[in-house]
Length: 361
Image 1 (cartoon, rainbow, N blue to C red):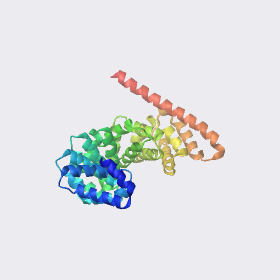
Image 2: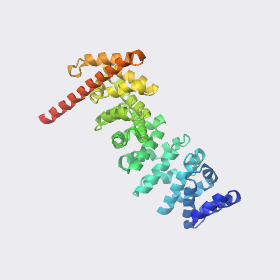
Image 3: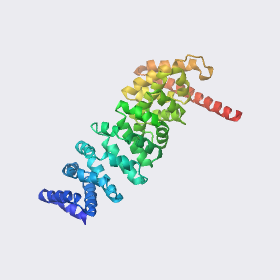
Image 4: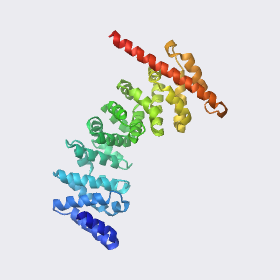
């Protein structure tokens, strides 16, 4: 019945719609909780896709935030979903919701044993954290540790929203110092393994990993995580253009920070083919980073016959210097095939070495 009334009011427009807005605002402020819950559900429906309705129903923000503080699970559920839709693509409403005091109850919901309520609260914080005005306020709350915990223990959708919210908050450099000690990297790697490497989720995971890799503790955690560097290499090969840019940035930061420590590890995980492809098909930033990393990877401070460094040096150097020359495109392709072959041989040799160690144990 309520849905049909809303539809009729929208069709009437003008006075009919104004009367409907007035009715909803009156009911959301009602002392009767049943009326408030029904009004919240109508707001959620009306603001799902309409920017106009989000603006015109912004007067409901205060009453909806007060509903979050109710002991009623049904009330909290209806209010948080209505607020979520009011905030989507509406900067003014995002700020208004935080200023109305929504953060405390939302942070409380992050700790809820009700997985749905926890998921909705995570989604709300993701949306609210997209506002640069809100970021300092959210950062000052207890949200970051709880988001990292949800990234580790939440359901799949909550994990996705948590990493996106953390990525939003990580644009404040000081927040990286808060995030890193909470040990998010194993959870980031786990999420990266489970999602499509070309997805938006992979982009956000890769972006956060690149930021955390600027710290020695972050690089150590990445190499210690099971399949950590290999997963970054897979993003380098299979990710979106943006994800690949973050992946090569992570590997470059590692190699620049400690060449001896990370060079062989990156080579053994088979990064060369993806890097070579990036020098041709990546974003401008990716191409520069890929060339820089290739130069670092070809420079060995120790002679290692098993890596066939002489062949690696020669081919990579030629690729880097000639890949942009149109008249040598055919030769570049030939060298690329040779480089891939060498990389495959390295990876196979590494697997054989691992198998030997296992048998010896």
